[in-house]
Image (cartoon, rainbow, N blue to C red):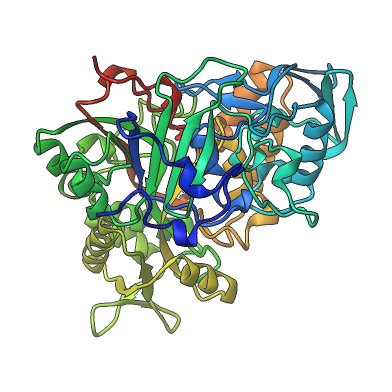
Length: 518
């Protein structure tokens, strides 16, 4: 069993300590909300694990997303854009305190935005904004752009866009401790275990539950066992393959929502085996999505017939029919593309065999999904060898140009508008280095539609660009959708079931809204 203090010996400095750590122990009998997540806090780098601190309601962003997936004010009480689309004004809340007692000011926000824009990493969306200047105007921060860009508020909801107190940073700019403005502050922090307490000077509503203990446990079985044994009040991100077992224990109930993530296949579009959309369509038709969704994920509604799920109501086309498996049509398309069976039954063309190795992660559902894909592609003459590995090996194969096909669980909802992620994945500048949504894929029509979308000034222009984007990604198949990812939260009988919000974009755990059962 993972205990609350098991990792203090190797703890990270996540909050401000005002006394010896022993004096922080809560009084015996204190009622503590025990929550578990399958992700550990691996570092203090904002591009790495800032999402934890935002989800735990420790750190906040200028703009947030409510549980219904809509943009909502947070540290900026309002925002507006000039008629030419080049100046965005964010009015900063007055009187907001950081957990160290210092006040949030527009100047602190300006400095934070300047740091974000210079980060220049794929993990920080703000660094991709065409910002020309950031200045303070009274209680507001004005962001001036080089060109119109409609997604500025969306980008400021991203995890690495959290605003921290100046005392959070070392002289070299690295984060040394997490001092935010959220309804919870960190009491004791470690890599796999964090204690939170309500911040009495929070600018908004006080949490219903004052004390929270968070455990990060990467083993799906460990998480399931904790839920079944009553050691966790909330399990956030319960594995789909263990969902029914946990709920069947009778000790918890489970809430489920279809998220913006997709379990799918991505390819190297420059490789001879996948450089033609016909080949990608053939692979798509070879897959039995309905069978996989039911057998591996226990949910027939998870079978994906397009890139974007119902988590994006304005982007998901409910009228599209399911993609049914059609082995004969898949074979016909491959033959049309010039692929012919060799003596061993494996397809070949111009001396290239349709055979490759796919690196598979350790998660149970990933391994099972890979084995199903392997078996189904074998029926059309494609040989897939499975190699146990990790994310680092996939990234290395991308950098070396050796990746042919991989599996992805891409989240298109890092911010409310999926175009933000589509730009990162499919814009020309990213084509050679986007490992989770297709490698070396670029289509000028998609590039044009993305540019039109972010510069659109009317609803009609936005809708036309959106339709063009969807037409290209759902026909070109740079990512071949297989199943959408369901987010499961197990809730013990100690917690009011209806008080637990779960949002499809996975922005926050919203633990400050959770109530004890009466």
